[in-house]
Image (cartoon, rainbow, N blue to C red; front, side):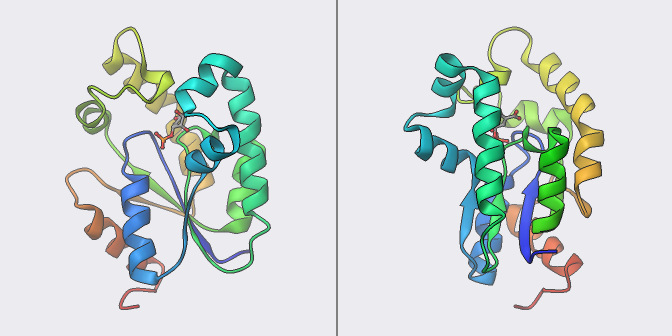
Length: 173
Ligand code: S3P
């Protein structure tokens, strides 16, 4: 198994913020699959969904993940919320290092993403209901992909990062 630390979880769980905190504490480089996809496509994710569709986005996402699996020195990886839904991706994730699921309640996501315009899967219709349904559907896949989970509701990103490092036996680094 690789040595990377990989954060997975629903949109709005705080993956990017916690990943930044981990990156700062460990002095490890931070990589973000969404940013890498945007850089590769030369456009924001919402535009990729619009022009090429979700299936194309998912193919690029798996490609980016496979590329990351080649990296040697340990990094912090923040992933898009839908990435662990593919069985193949879950397998690759677990081979790359320690997979940490940032668990979040639907109410927290609703509050955080109430006016978000960047997540195509949450646009249009009843946002609360979409979040509730999607999170219920995805929960088991996140649990299956992760080595361990951290409940994040009501916690500060630094606190969550600290919890992760303690669980990994790396705190105080
Ligand atoms: C998605 C989550 C987004 C992004 C895309 C699809 C998903 O990333 O990859 O909009 O399917 O949950 P974040 O989890 O960083 O918001």
